[in-house]
Length: 268
Length: 252
Image 1 (cartoon, each protein chain N blue to C red):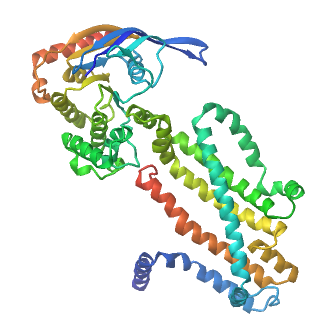
Image 2: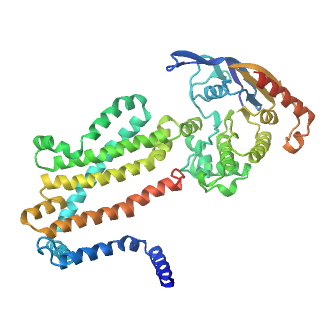
Image 3: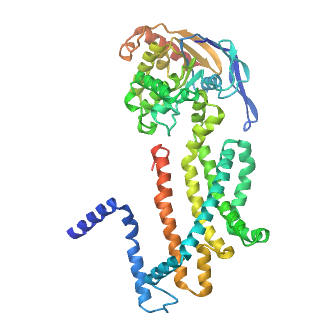
């Protein structure tokens, strides 16, 4: 009993000092199980490789420069798409959130197009733009756009009316109200939208790369299937999970909390 | 300082659910002299907040005129400062930047508007809270910030819409006493909307009683200042005036 408490205390102090450790520890049993199954020899090695095989493949592909290149291609596509999606989505969201007429006209259309999932656009995009960057960018922008627009609208509408009135009666012009009140008030929601958008966009990108791709992580995985290389497929999956975890848990989630909590807009 | 005049002010709007026109304010005429403190009381639904929103320029009026020093007003403007029941402080700005917001909109440089903001924060005993965010303050402190934020902009008229309705009873009395002290020091023109009769009498030079969108009666309050609750609760004249106004409001 005493030993257990001591262990608990040690774990608590350790994870407080290095919070990253808390995220790694749960994976230890997962890795152990994976190793055990692959080592037990239930399946052929080429069909079900172990963690060490994947690590080896990671070093080989990194050494050859394939993995870094493909990762870079995927990330640039995602960031370009996200930038364009935000550049379109935030102004559109502000417009719909502030104008009753824009809301009436755009909202049903938005909901309609939101329902047509990103991948559902692929057949027609392939006819229009072929297998290329335009098709990929279109899908990413499309995927990022909706969460950004919908959350921006939500954010703009959640800014209390009295705040805009207070700013007006303190001498702010409507344009300054937009800059000083509407945008900062909507910011926590905009960041939530961006966080969701990047998450959906990342998944959509991998799917599109499999179909359209000439490079990228998605292409690498699909290409590995053609070559029957299970190891590289698993490597791709792990890279996807790790990368998203790092971006979301270390950048996006803290950003979202920082804006919301400091201003007292989020109570949790 | 300028005179605020309401001339036959009226507000009628179309209620799409009822499918009919509704008149919230019938015909209100009122003059408020520079440096005067006027309380407006009335039962809920008497149109007092609608009148304040029209003066502030938040909603258009349907009939009559709102004149500030003889000139009609349109839309919101910095010459009419507003204190809200919801405080309406900007959550992402510090207390100092909230109070300096009006001067910022006028183009006052950062150093000068910080000086102005600190001066007004000191007036309300809030110097220590300058760098905090509104969410970190109690309700009473937030509304003190709300009051000095409006004052720091030097408005011709200060419009207060039930500003102390959402703080606890003890804090409310302190805020009322502080408001009379600040009013005596700065002599702003104030229109104070409330449904609390003792509060209206305690603060004002004149109490306007509204009923069903019309002015029922105006009563001058010539109680001496400074006004303190400990003394006024025992004051016969205060009791008499409050009772008179209360009766009017209840039968209105």
